Amino acid sequence: MRIEDFDLALSPLPGAAPVWHGDVDAAAWRQVCRQVHDKGGRLVALWGSDRRELERGFAVHAALVIRSGLVWLTLATDNDRYPGIDDIFPAASRMQRALGDLLGIYPHAPQDARPWLRHSAWPADQYPLRKDFDGSTAHPAQPQDYPFVTVEGDGVHEIAVGPVHAGTIEPGHFRFSVIGERILRLEQRLGYAHKGVEKLFETMTLEGGARLAGRISGDSTVAYAWAYAMAVESAVSTVPPGRALWLRALLLERERLANHLGDLGALGNDAGLAFGLAQFSCLKEDLLRSNAALFGHRYLMDSIVPGGVVNDLDETGAARLMAELDALDQTVTRLRYIYDDHAGLQDRFIGAGQVTPELAARLGLCGLAGRASAQAWDLRAQFPTAPYDRLDVRMATHRNGDVAARVAVRFDEVSEAIRLCRLILKGLPGGAIFTILPKAPDHAIGVGWVEGWRGEVLVALETGTDNRIRRLHPHDPSWQNWPLLEHAVLGNIVPDFPLINKSFNLSYSGHDL
Image (tube, rainbow, N blue to C red; front, side, top):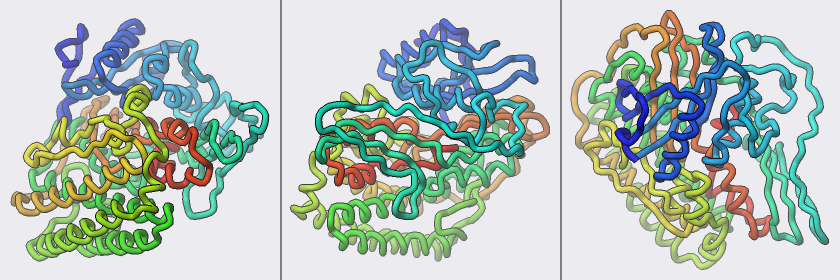
């Protein structure tokens, strides 16, 4: 579906990404969502905003991807109800539930009306994203009886895991219904790490928000920082220097490499090959040390700011990275041969945690996990912004949708990231790495849309007055992918859950804003 197929007034937004925005009424809201779905498009994000101080009530927003790019729809509502779209896009269900928890507006006839992010940190009649909510007020914890779905039958019992886990990981609750070791049902409960990030953005300037954006999900700091910078640059209609854009891509690919190397080691370890963990951990550590030496931070935090990047790269640094890529390429090639030839690993990987292409398409699986289930979506290839428009990105896909496929896609994407880094280092243009941005217009909007290592990261921005943030919604691909994990484990045994879960490696922090 292309943008000209809509019978709707849509305005293109300035900036690197192909984005259009339009206000719609309730009928057009569902009609456009249905059109996009029926033509093979996807829901990227759903969020809301409180515009009552502007005498414009509440608004619900949806970001939809079509063949031409991204369509941002805004539906105004004078009351606390709007037409839901979870019957069209199942991935919208948890986003609608979160919208109810945070803003107090609800869909008509939702598929699931339970709270999602609210546990006991604030009362049920308080809504943190309303403008009149005082974020400094502490509310006493209130016991909450969350109605999990129960499975009954002879021999069926429940295993509750988390939210506190054995290890330094984030909190999440997983409730298994099992018979013997076989999983009949898995139900997740997230939101334990809710931090008030979106509320905090509304107290910040556009410049100050960059540091917070880079801390939404620490393993994706580059993706979020670039998406935030892209949204600000869109709002002020400014293009950063070319050298800055090429350096941003170099940082993004190094973030992809670091995470994929770490995951490949952890997946080997979860399947009994500690040798793999040791080898890939060494490779990741070398990469992080080079990051610290050349860009000032192991995980590249605060390297990207609106207007450009903070650190330049000289010839000595580029030569060091090129040598590192050569060594990494050789070692990963040998390790892939070991993984592919290891009967024990393949026995654990193949067939475990399978998501068929049909299920993935129906539920909106995206990013790396989606590409492992034949969902061929990669912003770098389909909507390439500079410098990807000159790099001819080769998208990695697989059809089997199991742990083995997600491992294979990671190996393929490591090889491609190495190739892209080499091209970037060879083609890095000269010039400035930063430009001063003009003051943002009041109540302007902007969008950032970046293919991070986990999947597409979206940042939707509305400016206030005096260069401040009025509303900002950051969206992690984990929103779409967490529900698929519930399906992927069905029929598998409980001891395989850590391996299947790791093969998705979804973000708690990016989801529990």
